[in-house]
Length: 367
Image (cartoon, rainbow, N blue to C red; front, side, top):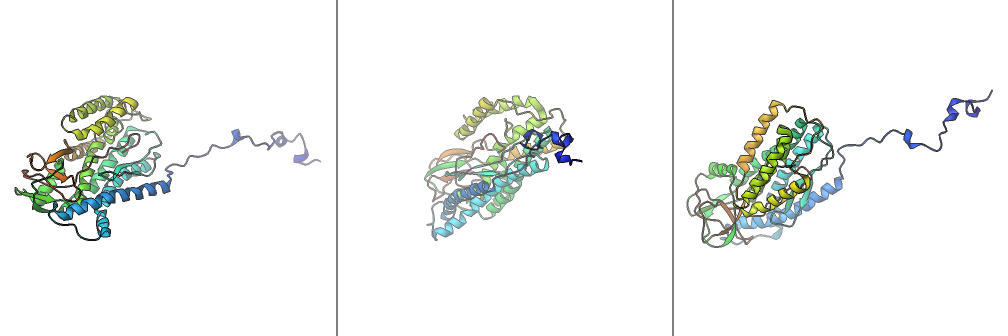
């Protein structure tokens, strides 16, 4: 009697094992939430360097009291105090992106860890983004992921703002010089009034660098919440209104174009929105299940997001300023020289902080 392996009639011998046919193999399982950790760490480290360089200049301006005092101390001390600014702005941006990322984890939507974007500029960064690799399964999931970022960033910037104001103090206002004035959002106005009341004429608030970082956090939050395209606000409007949100995106671009006639600092953001409108279209990418109704609880959260947008919104973020000819509606300003700080007089709630160009979030990922 022959053994099975030697018997040509044995059924198992009709299916040779060599060569291996890949069509019979099991498909590889895609592992979600994979990131190149080394790249995220390198970008974070570079962003820490560039933002600390900005923070070093801002701290020097802070201790100079609008150029009234000489900046003394060693260079290492100034650099270390630059961390007040850099750590605050990284914490705000990081909280924003981690809000998106953690909700992606919760809803099993594949995404990367945050990518920080270093930049040698007056801000020190172009912000941070995450890359989402999966389609959103439902409108509820899209809403949860979209709203988590602005709320998380807002939760971090509010205490940072109040702590920075607690380290700020009043000094006599300068009367000469040029610079940039920073617009005042409602949240900033309420916080300064609560901490200092009405600032007397001829005095300005010498702001701690943490206040500047918080100001940029408010600017980034308000811009991200604008109801356009794939901005966070665009995610929310699509989750709530479906395909009708495309008309809100178009209206938002038209409003942004109008805002450029009020303040030149809207120009960059408006150009970004127009380019996104041209190449990506006005419609938000559809979710897998477009017909699932959004729970009523999410509309309550949407109202909270709208409130955050209103109190962080800045109609004229940056404007050139001549300190010899102050304007009554200007609130915050910085001298064009990074060492002395100057501000405008004539405002009942006048404050001073360094100015820098606002950072627009890159398109293609959740900013």
